[in-house]
Image (tube, rainbow, N blue to C red; front, top):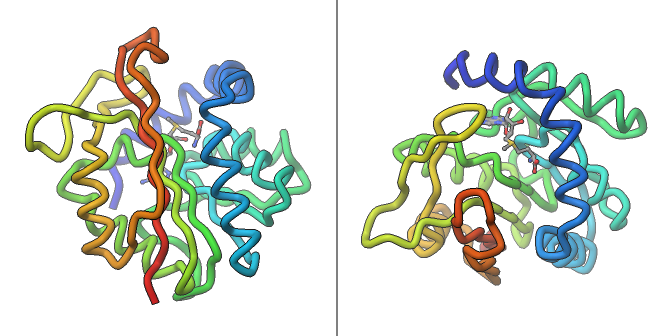
Length: 212
Ligand SMILES: C[S@@+](CC[C@H](N)C(=O)[O-])C[C@H]1O[C@@H](n2cnc3c(N)ncnc32)[C@H](O)[C@@H]1O
């Protein structure tokens, strides 16, 4: 179950989002960096299908395609999916929830969630990571990108996001939850807070692998 207000919020901002965010993504070598590493890991560990969950207007799904990975996009917002399908008609996009993916057990070589776990309330993050584990084949890779929280012991801190209430997460605590879900961290990148002129948050990218 996901809050229907979240879907309405993203349907409402989708057109504006599609006009600005893909361009910002493609002008940031740091945002590209771990997506390229992830694509390389998927390709060198036998290839296979990758789900871009919370794909928004599909620019990262398309970037994965340009990097030689067969990817499809899933998003809870029908309007985001309509825009993604219009922009990249050669790719597959579908409406769906990251906590209930329409994929067989162990069927995917990779799952990427770029800034899309940010609306997941912290108490629901473990079940979402369990879902990523379910759909990943053993040895498959997960890439999570999210605004990082570097405060004391908390898992997450809420912040005011343009679309909807959002959370920034502690990379260490997320790595612990990943491990408990059967996904071992293999790499991480933390982008300095000074690179985020809007909020001054560090940005985290965590790569994890489904253990055998
Ligand atoms: C901040 S945008 C990020 C979009 C894109 N991944 C990017 O990198 O620009 C968050 C996206 O995640 C989607 N989303 C949020 N929660 C979701 C959920 N539980 N299941 C599927 N999609 C979700 C939203 O509809 C929105 O398109």
